[in-house]
Image (cartoon, rainbow, N blue to C red; front, side, top):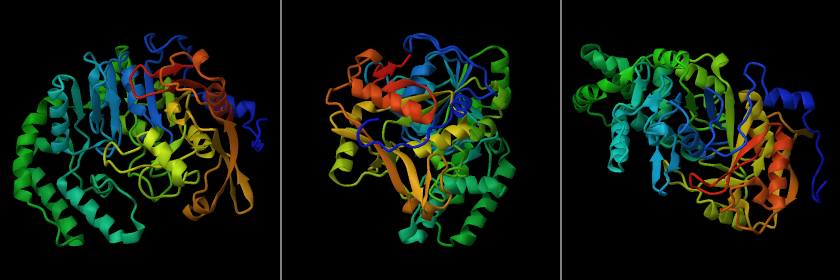
Length: 463
């Protein structure tokens, strides 16, 4: 055992096997070389394991070159995915799936996504300015809910009311849009084809919002005129995506599903109320696309080698002071969507074990390992002490308990080498290999991909 480590009981072999190879999914053999070889799963899901910003977009972009369909199931423009092409050109995506750089792939926005139509058109225009054509390669669910500027206004007003107890929302209207969906007064993409009922439904939505916020600025006539034009532009994209995905699967097409946000922000399983308003866990994939879980062959969890969080909420392994600032600057930890500086912390294995239980990951992608280079030692949170009890894989539901939790750390040796140019597992420093292996052992799920830089090729495959 390394100096500074504190021993905790590891998950038993049976538990580790159950997490790594859930019985509901097919067992598959992995290719033994890098991303140029085809990943074998017909249906593959990529999910965030922490509080978002783990680097899901990069892995999706790499895998997307091997898939026929790339789909998003939940969230909205609050999700910021950054990808790079082979020339190093940066693309910041919010609503579009990360498969847009694969010219042969169809991109699907599923029924679980809330769609701000003008924002979607802006994003399409930005991609086209960079030479990426979207026409004919995007499908939008007719059951997806519309997110209006009204929802954004409500979001900002609700956040202002909270004063010192703010959630830290992106103010993109996501929560109010999902609230409209839950209270059954939301409008869906299919409503765009029914102009008369669309007007009546929008009037009811505005009336409901103005009862709560009488001073809300909103020009419904201007909105109706805008959406009349949007409806015409959207028509070629709109379809029954449930039917499309099922047909694609039956035809043997390969489907890659991209989660937005992350499980620790899940409205049911995350650090409630400091969460998003959807389910960025495996359950949200099922409902947000209308696909049965028996079709899922691989579920990949993406985790940073450390952790970050944007906005308020409990964060047991947070790093403060100069070290926290150093990690933030080296990792360029500023939000893709908001530009806000992210909070940074050590890897939280308690949270990671917890989300592995929820999602049944078959593989992990450990990202941004290069950011930890040049640290003399690296800490890993392996347990919480809460009310006299040590927890190693159970997450406290109470925010008060999480905020009061004392973290049990293991201390691992760091490395001084620059690993950003490494492309083979054997070429990583021994201390970096030991860190990855220790994470794998603690969590019980195999680490398959290791990110060592922002570029598409900056990835190591662990056989």
